[in-house]
Length: 238
Image (cartoon, rainbow, N blue to C red; front, side, top):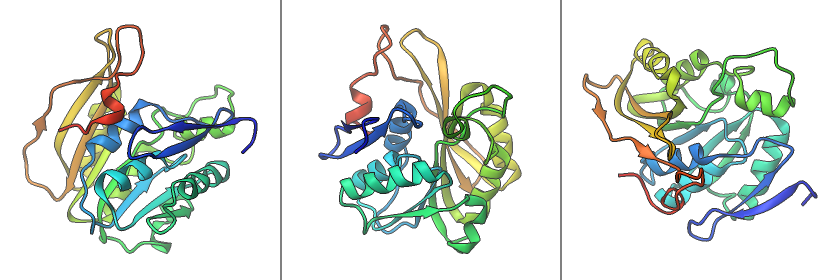
């Protein structure tokens, strides 16, 4: 490990994660999505934008997945993801795909995936100068929302599920993109911090699903002092 890396306890079945302070580090958004997404052991599961691998690692543990394919485009994050897969002895469960997900047909057949999960870049590309790794993780430099949803629509089988989180202020945009790509939003909720501010939109969309959306109560993720609530680390969202 480098001096910039630290090992953190994921508080789930003894799992641990290496984070690098010079790269992009995951937030509670990833934990919320991993808790919310539901899969079966036999499902073909894909994560788009794996980063450090935290969502794939948590999903595998919580759902006993036989295999999950994790796409990550950035070399530095690919290397970190691979370290975390090995740290948790999940080499036979998580397949790291070192490629742009827009090239998915080179790795996975269209209309063959049961479940997709993604915590994608949240923001439109800006001219603000920042670390390139963090910019690609946070801004639509290599993957736009339009590309993400279009790829999900092509990958999924009929009845397959796309689980995604996105900024609350862009929720209507994501819903519209899903509708344009034959993905019906079937479940959704928002998260709010301990100060009553709505922050995150989380949804499940189904390929060629029927009309009708279940709106779940808001999930409070923080104490009033800003600290993450313990339940985010230990409990599934039901």
